[in-house]
Length: 196
Image (cartoon, rainbow, N blue to C red; front, top):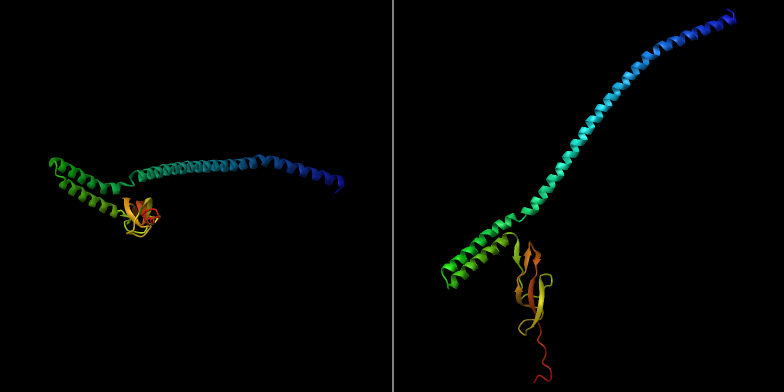
């Protein structure tokens, strides 16, 4: 075969291949486009599902925040409900004592007894909730429990002793709720040379 004949044969084969490629290309491209279209649709569907999940999670979180806020407000509003329920009978007894005193005008003894009973009941309610009075009279002044309002000269008690309690102090589970207001003793001033 001559060289020219070989070149013509090669060109013919190349042209035939080119025609074959051009004929199969649109079919292959169409399949790829269809695959890409399906993949895009799946991605869009997944994105829509994820967006729905995000919206639901955001709504759930918002509801949780609102519920927690309501619970906190209710807790603050009704935190003292138990102690107030215990105090109400004390008020009832005070009202009964006053009503009884009004009916028996001039009889202070019955009013005093009623108030004393009510006070005892009130102290028991406070003890139930861990409130106890601070002991003061005759004790050494303790700045952690007492608040000094003044000093009194006393030869009978050592200096720095609580001689008078102006207002009771209270502890709540051993923690100071309110200090006692007290008067504290000091040593009497020594008589001067001109005090004769």
